[in-house]
Length: 127
Image 1 (cartoon, rainbow, N blue to C red):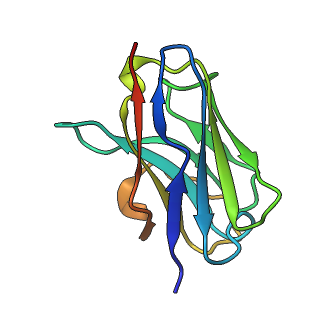
Image 2: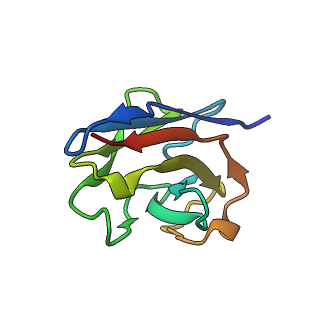
């Protein structure tokens, strides 16, 4: 059974950095569309970043462009989201999601497009 697990969240001061990991029970980096969503209390889940299965297409929310970026882990079952220059507005539960598998350069920012979700990891940015 395919499962996703997020890790790397925690408490960080404004301007700090975190590395979020999305680990799967199977290889995902080159087979699945991977996306990160976040949900703050009382707010809807919003897309943060997505990556096509081949890595040829990536998209980032305007609010995180230049601060967040995907990177590859040495394990093909893990995808990393590097988060820099964190702001209090980034505080939320962050979820990893997978769609596909697909060989097409697809990248979606719609939560409904993804069928596989992790349980989330808390990111808190506060001084």
